[in-house]
Image (cartoon, rainbow, N blue to C red):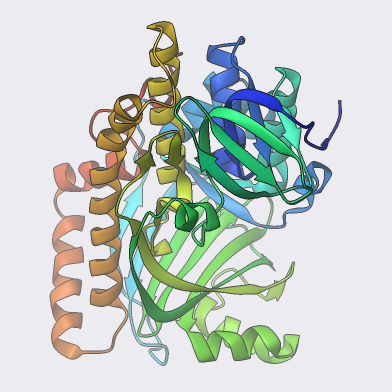
Length: 414
């Protein structure tokens, strides 16, 4: 199995996907599985044999795990994933000796399954690549989709290596700073939060028992997400200047600041991987499609990680776009036609806008130390904790089961 090839001059594909992350890989796999005759290519600047070296982990909602099961890789992933069995939410100041728990989600399940799992990216990404490659998806990597031009019946893609290929549809899954989105003339709504998210992995003495924690602190949320063994993944929000200082500093200083936020309830805590910081903001594309062009994943919507829904929104895009394209092919329609692509846009744009607004409001409400707002939000969390039906609704949303779902997210074939 080849891990990557160069583009051959003049190749034509039904769908070319720019971006070999979880969105691009899962879309390629979904399309090829549902329609083996579809010619699909993935273009990515990194060699595919480096996918297993990604040190990060991702929260996979129950609906997304059903999709991965339908795509044939969940059985391979599950043994190395950590179920999230319980979640607690606190709201306090950093100096507070006690962090009151205002909201708990414990023992809540959808159809007897955890509402989410933590999955190492170094496990999920190679599994997606191997399955897609095995079905005949062509990988053009390492290479880039440098430029493209739209014609009446095809899009012509010029790669960084100097090759040219054509496709009926180009999908940009190249991240929140998507260059292809800009080349397509699609504008965005964007603002920065003045925060950065520090991502790292830690090891601790005592077991977490599958419990996730989200501590709302004045600088932003500090999330502890369980991994297999006595390890946890951290998504630590700080003001950008402080985050940069922590990431650039020595391990001793970092671990002191880490312990102040993490606490000692799991015993001694120490770093167990590299640390990185990335700026946080809200980016929403004003349109998802153009003739023979579509956005998916972070290229369409970049949101705050406060609700842990960024990756799962990307999987929703994949499930919806794959269903629209495969259905169009079965009806003899052109997958790059604007009226076909607008069905995908209608399915996904409003939902992503809603989630963007929700995460924006939550971040503004909780990332501060204003006494009046603290009182309001703590009262609200306490009320939700005492209302089982409302809490169950939040669980369904977190699990990905709220609202009409594409077939893959229901665990059904397209």
